[in-house]
Image 1 (cartoon, rainbow over the protein chains, first blue to last red):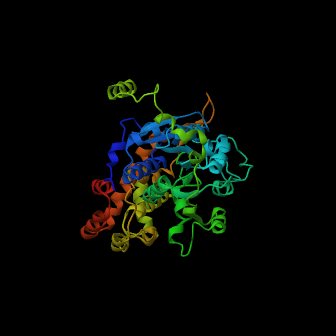
Image 2: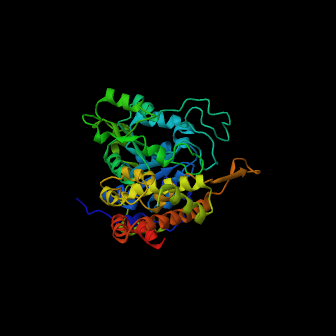
Image 3: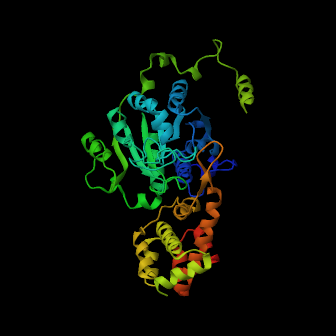
Length: 295
Length: 142
């Protein structure tokens, strides 16, 4: 077992512009902790994001990062994973990016099962654009774009993921970063699409779903006697549980399913990054020159 | 010191209304409940008005070791007004969030100061011994 890495390895000097108290602080810490615990070095991981407050996370992390256009990180992440299956690929985006404009990619990523860890920073609002209701905002939620209350019923990402065949479905709370770090580590170890919906307060624009609101409602599935995350029927019940009691932890996991990359015929001759260049192996000095071009 | 006196001192020192002072005290106690181990909480609850001590019943045996000041202040800013008027340029609402953290810590410092007056030296030391350094220092400096 390789030694655990230092947390500071993933730190960057970039000034963080999240609001004081934002749940994203806990999420980035949990991501770093999970990577450190699993000894995944910065160059061995790619974090892909979209657009939003939470999507700034790759910019604040010393690791490979790729900020895409709104809603598209899963598509880009899937491409990256196909190009280099040995790279650990993560997607980090908000509920608007993931479940709104990115909803189609979400559905099909769950169905395809690429080996990607998907963390959704779910604060039930569009924060970066200053307070519009999102797909996970509750019915009746009053915002600048829903002055009479949101008309739509909130999307249930746990149920959608389960319906689409996701092989790892979990939920956590930004007020419990250690628990979240543990789930992220499990998700990274899982072979296949792993969704973690992180309930996080938006301290500026969502004054309903606050830290206190979540604290009064969440309970841990790990502490529930007899709960079996491989039981699909039980997972359905938990996926639909919301309101006075909100379960966090691993709702559902099935191991051993082939990933998307496992089944792509074009990869049978090796991944694109491992293919011979010009019919020969590059000399060591040529590889070093290539690396220098990108540093 | 009873609850009303506790809140009145915060009201006066922080320049808040009585209701704002109550909200602030509640927020600080809830935030402390996230970082104080249950053992230390049990030792100090008896020194506090019951209306405040009740929040420490939430304390866990072992608080989350990854909690830091960034998340702690989140409990405090949730009750602050972080937005202003409608933005007249691109729409949405003007933000005052950038100032929210400073105001939250200012109010927290005042609540800590009043809390300290409720505790004797031994109780104060017990409390600080269980707090992470990043918040214990703020408690001592209040």
